[in-house]
Image 1 (tube, helix red, strand yellow):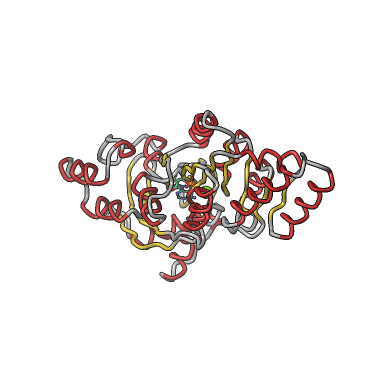
Image 2 (image 1 turned 90 degrees about the vertical axis):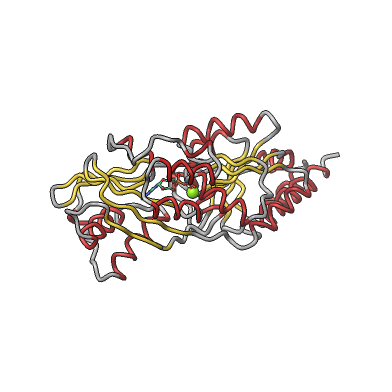
Length: 317
Ligand code: ADP
Ligand code: MG
């Protein structure tokens, strides 16, 4: 496009809360055929609340468990962490991050740390492997529909509470003391307003959509249902490198944009034709690796920006 048209478009986008790091990206944006979304913190608000917390060990009290988890989570910037810290506080349990040593973050899996001389892991099922432990079953839920999963869990004698929670599509967290599971909790999140409309608009622009999430298949399906099943491709249980692999796959359909907020989205954002980060809540890494920052966190600005980019491109000729 002409330099003037590009300049005007970049300025207009900026007033709308989209920081585009150069005119070249505006041109690519006009050609986008696929938009891939991260789930947690992108399609959803990333404002979790704890809906259940249980100790599964007779030797460890629930209060002690909550204290360990809340203290270690105080060190994490993951959207789930704040909910677990708040949960401690609302149960009159003061988290003590200063008592945590050896803190480690495993993107797409969870966190670990030492407290009271104990090595604690908090995260999803992948943490079980990391803690060299099985959570009752080795069946991978990603390839099973929800009902199959529930039946298998029942057959394999897994605790009813956990399977019920997964059915609701809440995110389940597991707590391990070294290689022994000592706790289970569930957290719920809600979709951002305007996301369903934005996806509809993208469809109108003949753009396909995908969800790439590190969360469980059932949690992904809950969001998918809430968005009226309008998203074409849903992939769950992904590690950062799996997100990159799916971006490469989606690129075969045409220029692909990826939108994410987390540290775990960094590599996928960088490997997409256009990486878009969430401005307000996004991690620094996501912002650095992205080509566009969505200052307002408003997903509705994305179809708007694509329309603007397409109009600007037509001004070349
Ligand atoms: P998404 O790709 O949807 O943004 P993430 O990759 O950030 O999700 O996280 C994937 C999963 O890893 C979460 O659903 C959670 O189960 C687990 N996880 C990540 N960070 C933490 C944490 N700080 N505490 C507990 N669990 C975590
Ligand atoms: Mg995220």
